[in-house]
Image 1: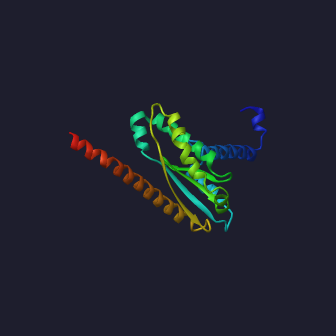
Image 2 (image 1 turned 135 degrees about the horizontal axis):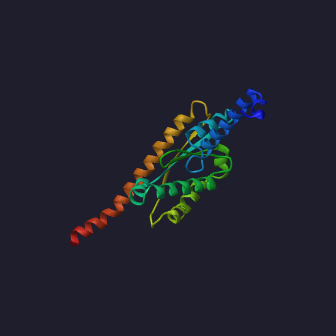
Image 3 (image 1 turned 120 degrees about the vertical axis):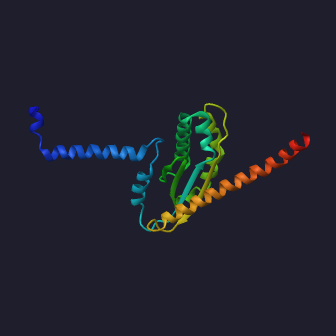
Length: 196
């Protein structure tokens, strides 16, 4: 053993290793694959949410993401996730919590005051998103995003329900989009049948 190492107090060595482990944990919690909080980071951020502060849980999902992974490979899917995460961070109100819940589902938690100041940020995100996502894709693809939102009055005891409510709203939005797409395709399908 080196002489200098034996002169260091064992408690100090333990503290240094503990701090190094904490730094690694924070980096993993913050960055994950896409540069936003993961579920653990989200939980830690919500633990620091001001008591009694009302807010909004917004859940986002990239429509037909599996097609990108299956058609272009997981690297293309990862690029899409990273691009979407960057777009979320760029458009979400300053100070909002941005996290990836898993797969292609993301969450932005904002205070009610943030929502009042910038109520249109989700519309802005959706308008610029197809171009952003298509620029990162290896071939021309069309990606849209579904989202759902739900308010909560206090984080304690209400956030989990707000997240579930936002998730249900997201899936209703997906279903409405699918119905519109099917309705738009139906007249074309019957014309093709008649012409054939």
